[in-house]
Length: 121
Image 1: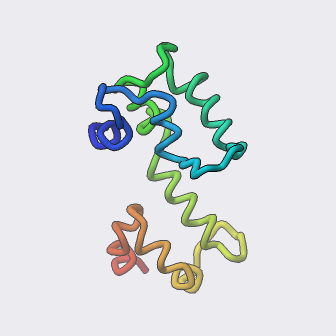
Image 2 (image 1 turned 60 degrees about the vertical axis):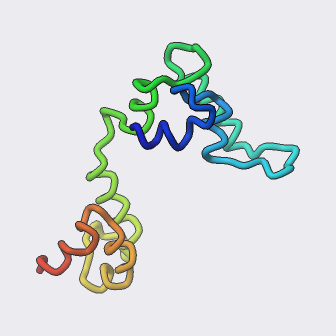
Image 3 (image 1 turned 45 degrees about the vertical axis):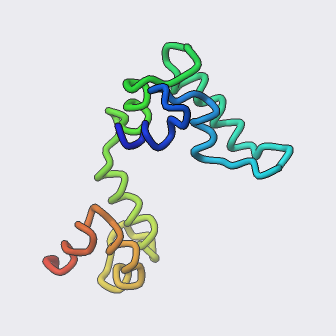
């Protein structure tokens, strides 16, 4: 939480305002029109991120954003690995499917960055 706040809070006031929030994801680089997803993120900030509607996210609001209590990170990562690797879409991974996407597994925290693969049949 502290690292996120330090990275995004460019003016150092201890809060993340809308422009800091958007600026962390998108750099306009002279473009006149924002992409649709940026407009959606602006709406997300106003409607859901800034819960007390004061125009900025405090530490608690930022925590709810980056560490939502109803989100299971392990399950989400496991689903992602299966979705990306299961070539025949049977819901199971073969050795070949894992090897074909080995870069995905070695980079995943779910496999302890590849360590779990050497212990598994």
